[in-house]
Structures are given as C-alpha cells and as structure tokens.
Image 1: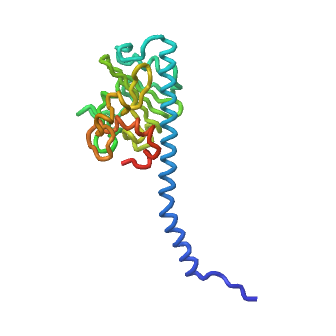
Image 2: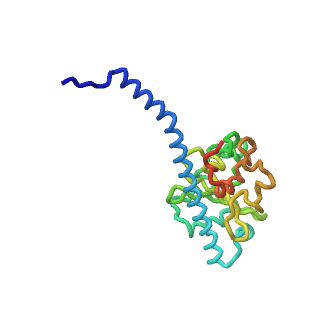
Image 3: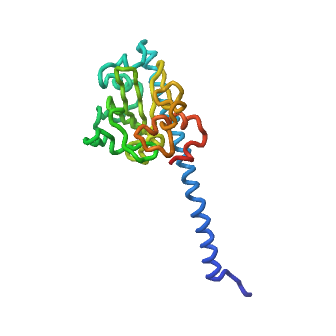
Length: 221
C-alpha cells in the first residue's frame, strides 16, 4: 500500500502562510488585551480613590478641599487610612527628578514628547499593595489633585493619559481630569488631551475621555 504525505515544499509553504497570518493577527490581539487591561486598571483605581475620598468626608465631617489641608503632606496622611499602602515614598523618594527644570524624568505627557512638571506631584506619594503609584498635589489655593499610575512605576509607557491618570477633588468628590468644571476641562481646551500636542499639560484632561469613551485605549498616540 502506498502512503502519500506532504512534500517538504508543501510543509514549508504551509508554515509560511501560518507565519504571515500570525504576524498579522497577534499584534492586534496583544493590543486588544492591553487595552482591556488598562481600562480595567483605571476603573479599579478610580473606584478605590473615589471611595477613599467619600470615606474621608464621611468620617471627618469636614470638606475635602485643599483649604482643609494647608500643610504639605497633610492630605496624604488622611488618604493613607483608606487605601492599602505598600510603601510611603514621602514627597519624592520614588520620583526621578530633573534638577535643571524640576520635571519628572520617568513620566511624559500624553504624546511622550515632553517631561511633566514635578510640582503637580510633590505633596505625597504612595505605592499601593496592587502596585498602583499615587502622587498628590494639595495647594492652599483651591486645587487638590490625585494622580494614579495604574500599572505601577516599573511598567510603561509612563505617560499621562496612557497609564498615568489625573483626578481633581471637587465638592468632596473625586472627578476625572478633563471633566466639565475641572481645571483641565477639555471642553474649554482640547489641548489637555490631544494626540498631536507637545505641551507638558497634554494628558491632564484625558482621564475623563478614558472613562467615558469605550474605544479610548485603542487609539493612544
């Protein structure tokens, strides 16, 4: 009985076709997975911080505003009571600061074309048990900001609006950066979340879009 099989040429052609198909589909699958993962991490971080602000307000009975925390580092002391902290980095221990212009070397703007100013993140820094890196800014002039690196210091891209998300505390609630009424309202200035902008503030307004647009993470710059 004669047994017929594939020739070497046929096997090589088949493997070549499989390789081409894999090269075309695997990157899309990986990007989709990353998009879903980032979305889930952002939602988790938002929920954790939102609940923490609510609990601070409920337990203290005082407004959660920058005026309530006039001293540098005073707000982070209260926040620590309501989140699971792995490490307290003080005001700068976990940051890579460029002393020439006071910017962060390890974080970029939305398009990764510019460093971002350290003064937005220098009133307390925490690494949470799930790896989230929290940075706080509380000025006694009406602004209280919380920024979350949702996948941690060691994972990229370390860019505003991509894995680093900016929030503002308004009326005792945590509000996504870029939402109506926030300091970096994207309805007033679209440059706060632009896929082409180079300014250092590009990305401060992206949190609102990331939470409200279903395909946001599929179209990062």
